[in-house]
Every structure is written in structure tokens, then in C-alpha cells.
Amino acid sequence: MRAVVTVIGKDTVGILHKVSGICAEYNVNVIEVTQSVLQDMFAMIMLVDITDIKGDFSELVGRMTALGTELGLSIHTMHEDIFNSMHSI
Image (cartoon, rainbow, N blue to C red; front, side, top):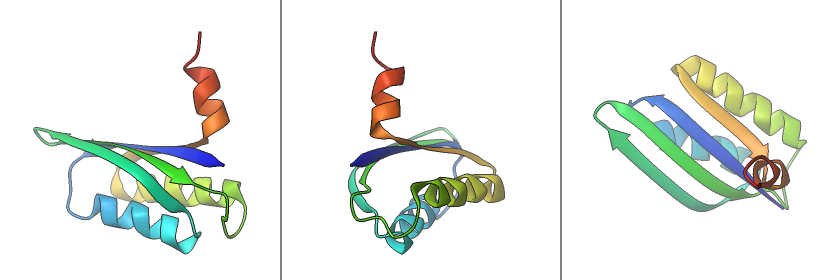
């Protein structure tokens, strides 16, 4: 099973480190990452493997959301099935 994590906001040092650190805490493997910095805006999309997640997926979602609030970023974490449903016609 996979999930998609999106991060958008003002660029600061350590965003990727903090997001991937939470993934490591939950035994979530980062499969792919794409990120861009446009002037001072940071945008990142991560595809992660949640097959062997430690704990509940909703806990991971809550931790990512809380990190976003703490850093002033928008962090959304969603199961791949939901992401695919939202982006199909």
C-alpha cells in the first residue's frame, strides 16, 4: 500500500528532513520525492510505502498535519486510492 504526502509553504531549512523523519518513526518507506523551490515557496510531493507502517495510518496523518501547523506549511497525507480517485475522470 502506498500514500501521497504533499507539502507546500514558505521555504525553510530542514523541511524534507522533518517530514522524512516522521516517515522513519512510523516505518514508512519513501519511494519517490520531487521538490521545487520557486523563489521562497517550497513544494514537495512524496510517494511512500505504508505496507509495514507502525501504528495506525490516521496517526501518521495527524503527525504530518501537526508538523505542518508547527512549521506554517500545508501538509496533506492521503492513501493512494483516495489520491487516484480524486484525480481520475
